[in-house]
Length: 388
Image 1 (cartoon, rainbow, N blue to C red):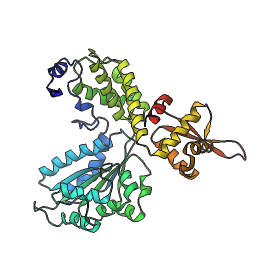
Image 2 (cartoon, helix red, strand yellow):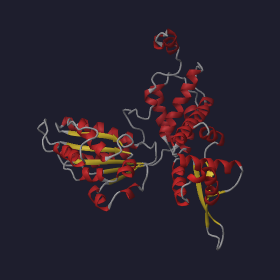
Image 3 (tube, rainbow, N blue to C red):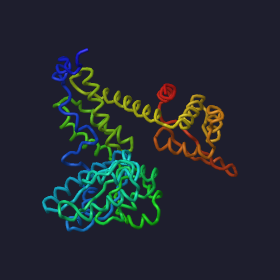
Image 4 (cartoon, one colour):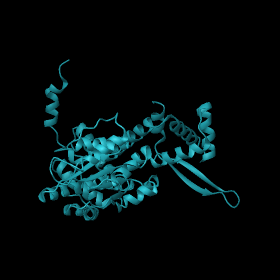
């Protein structure tokens, strides 16, 4: 078979493209020249970081907010601005972004920082003390002959803390000339940090509220100018994407995914424009991909809990935690976990948006009961569960 990428029809289809100029601005990782509706938060970050331009270690900062509220983009935007200012002042400032889904232990984070700063450290094999010493040595001597200041951005820090404890924060906050910017989706992530580390962290907190529909519309309008050819978006496309994303807790990532997927559907069908019907179908596509990905990566016991919830939902029964446990044990046979552990699974599934829980009172003397409801399409869940 000849190389498929040398097929001239592929390039002919690209040249006939009526929809896109450039897809990159529709990626949530794309950093625009101006970050719409996040000026206040960027200025707050700058206020806490500006000390580094006076050769003083800046404050530690924590950014809170739900997914898609611009936390990562704002921190990266501020990083680019500070690096430019530091270069103009001839200062040696490094700002390293670490995504904690990729580096989930203190050792991995420190080794990665060492390697980025010019000190070779293996990904495994050293003791913790050795890798900490290698990291701290970077601040005693450096080839530039200048005082090194380092700001470490730890994105989704709660994942690292949950898996490996707060050792990374203890090491970083106890190292001279190092500041930390932590990013978390959860306001309660500090319950994972011990009092001694909280004391040395002494961070400044910045909250990122969800975007409203009008704000999302502004974001999409700016990206659309960069991404789509002129006049291909029908007038109701951006308002519809914005309204749908506003219902998803103001998630700009979701809004961008909707617009991009709608455009791709129009492109695949060789349409001359993107319509609201493309947006509606894009929503179904995204929902399908999201739910399928989540369910297929869940641990077996959580999949069994979902199977029990699906069964009870299809029977039309009110799902209490007691009924759920009975059905779950029937499915699991002798491999069931404890009743107490089921509550952990319920909380995790609720955080993922697959189910919801509501505590209701049964009346005087009858106590309170958790009612569990499925929050995704039954058919979609059934298909995902039984094709694993």
